[in-house]
Length: 153
Image (cartoon, rainbow, N blue to C red; front, side, top):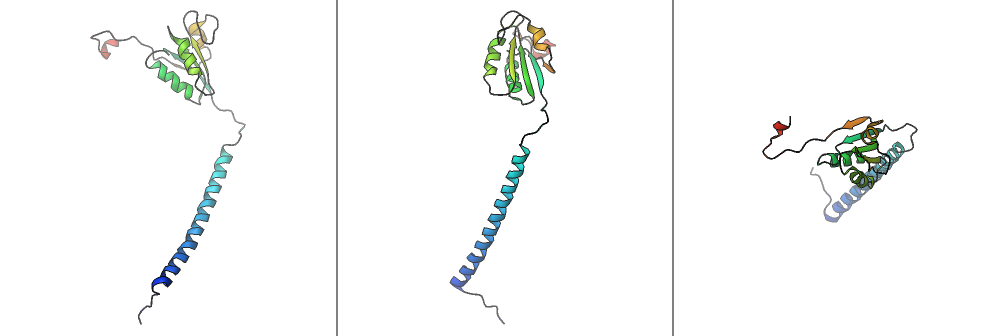
């Protein structure tokens, strides 16, 4: 008793018909799963009555080589509601540049003397620190020639 297999076209016809129905069923199941997942994800992004946590961050030394990119990262963070930049020179320009980044945080720049962004009275450091939840100080003294990093401490 040998097993008789269909030959040629009949075998191909059975194989493709069976696989075609299996493929259609698998595709339909996959699409249904994607639709269900997409609906669940959309529902999770819906309106919520809870308040997002926000913080005021003050960067003291905001115009230096570390302070500028640090200020930019703070500006881009959704956790930061207000960014106060302070340094001895050039802070209004840095704050003006950061204010062009489309985010929900408000940016202000402060100097120890007159000249703030946006223009305000001369309150400087006190105004930058008022209400700050986080204070970051990347300010420092540049190394002189022949100085090592150990000499800074």
